Length: 147
Image (cartoon, rainbow, N blue to C red; front, side, top):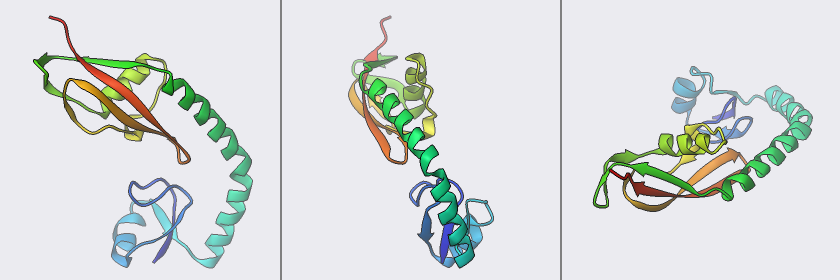
């Protein structure tokens, strides 16, 4: 079953992509949730026309994402957390990394950050997706809070 995605779907594709999925997944989940529409020949033509018109706007978004990416690469992010030795009391997640970026002046939603769950003090790297074509590796360090 071919579908046109109406919005980004994790592990499947980005908005306006034409994807092929199993019938049940498309019919029972993607279409009812409003994530996709059937890829009929007329819908494909409409999509092609819309993509042509969006090309210029898309380039502007990519340029903005690239400037943000350069600014993020220059940052040195340190996240302080309560720890006993090198083990953390709790964990550091995408939300903590997003909060640290917000404190540095870059508002990025936590769902676009992939860092995993970290439970030890040390240096780590998170992946930040600013645009479908712009993905940045963000190094950060977790340090123990001073008592």
